Image 1 (spheres, helix red, strand yellow):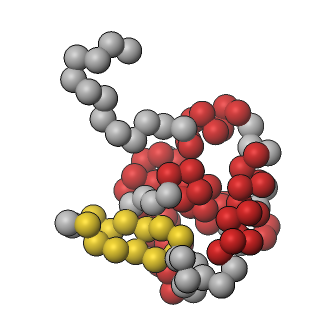
Image 2: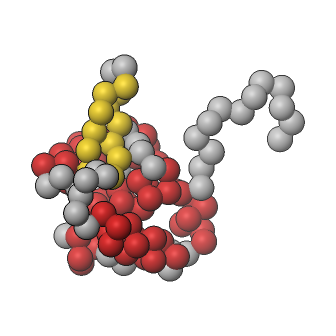
Length: 109
């Protein structure tokens, strides 16, 4: 949907992932989309060098999120949110509605 605007589909998936979850790490994104980690890392590096996203280390894991100081952040988030509305429900369920917290032990499904 936004592939033509952003240059490739990986960037679109990263933006949708960050929009849905707020932050993420490369291996988690790669596992979610079934993509090689290096493709995700290349695009994250490109987006970070453009100051669209920022990263921080939490232990040994590098977490990425939208850069709150990016001048067009509000507009970018609005565009990504609007495009997200037009995704098929099956795709939303598959990629962007996963439970990321562990379930309490013994809790019934």
